[in-house]
Image (cartoon, rainbow over the protein chains, first blue to last red):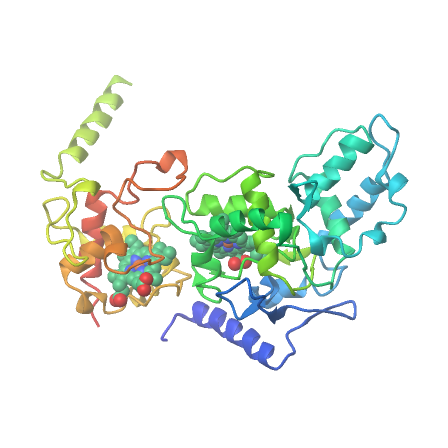
Length: 278
Length: 150
């Protein structure tokens, strides 16, 4: 290709990870547990053959931070999540632990979110705030604030290693259809859809970034760039701003639908929460 | 203070009157994707065009393209083809068409249209109704692309 050294190096890394994939040795092993980072694409992701975790597309250095929970900066926030889980808050004098004795009981929950409850699509963040306002008599947390992301990281971690498995039929179907439409709709002055980058160009470099499939199995994700946990909706917002589009609001019907659709595109990929990205 | 203001307005006047014959984005006419007439009515400056090409807030062309002539700038993307030899492969009118609105040459391309001002879906307010590049910048980039020979 005659590329510059820097690019050649990066391209070499992509090739290396896909070669490794072919040898079935690219799995992420954390604390002795193997996390599936690739799976056959689900039928409803009709333009993909395989699904890949965003972890595969990151540099060796960034990847390494996710291999050990002591190195993973996201765990500082998981620890804060444990404190919040046990903290009494609100008019009812309750903590999360008052109703949910053991946080480990949430194993499997992340794989099914977002989900339809009483006809409405519900995200993990909304479930947490529903407990806070309805059961604890406490103030809701900011959608992507530090308390919320610490809590969703703690709850998500209980499903680490389990494959994403959201429902997209029945009363979830209209939400899924809406999310799919948003995924393929071009927006902004640059006139790009999610699919332009994450479906048609994953594995390619866009400036210094190796484009991934934009999977959400690792969220909330710790980003080296802003040194905190980032929610899915904050990431969607960032990508929309990058194409110079007015983002939808965090927690909006649009982003919830998009989240369900993306979760379904990652069907079979293991939960990696809290993942590490650049 | 008064003096500075006068100086600034002189610069603005200078800018707006630099091109006698600007074609507004919506009035550009295409033929098989190509745009025959200069959108400023004048030739572009290749050196300025190179700067526009590299600038991340302007062309940011390296986001998607490798260009050996810009080997001094880091991180060339590979979403689009290498632009080495683009000045051999395409005529001036074709390059002007590709930069103005590449969708007229490549159907459904990922490459943004750099000189349109309408038809955006949910643009950020500060970009609404504005083209990414000005007419002068389009001509400068076209002049620069014509220098990319193999």
